[in-house]
Image (cartoon, rainbow, N blue to C red; front, top):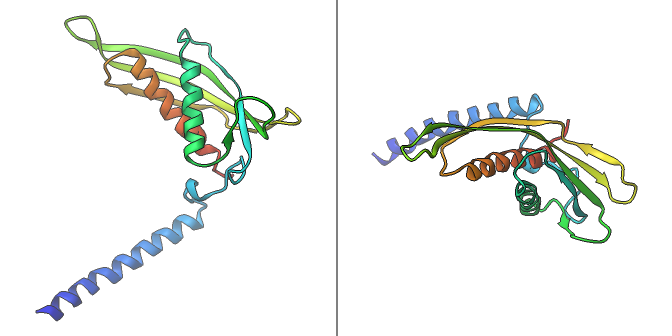
Length: 175
């Protein structure tokens, strides 16, 4: 009985391993790789970075502060660079919000919106801290999403967080 169990598990394991290896080799053959394993455009984590600014054409005055915090947290948690607030830095980053729309759908009896549909387009530019020249641009990153949240501010934060995550991901993707 024990031999039968072992042969059954081997019979399953070998084909499964073979299939996984085939899928991995096919994906790597067409250029796909995990972005977390690729080098960052900022270097190996020993360079410094600071904010050049956040361009915010919206009426949400708290949004630039939130975006700054999200970008700092995301780059810091991935150990892509060390943040400095003042003085010289190897890199400077500027985030641009190109477009932002938010609308509420499905209202409760009290008049509060139950669903928010948000669309945002943002990009980022990384500058050389010494020469002030653009060394990398993310290009526009867009997202439209429906959020079931308690208030408008939460919907804006969720949408911003999703886009910042994608933006920092692009800093590791080689083309």
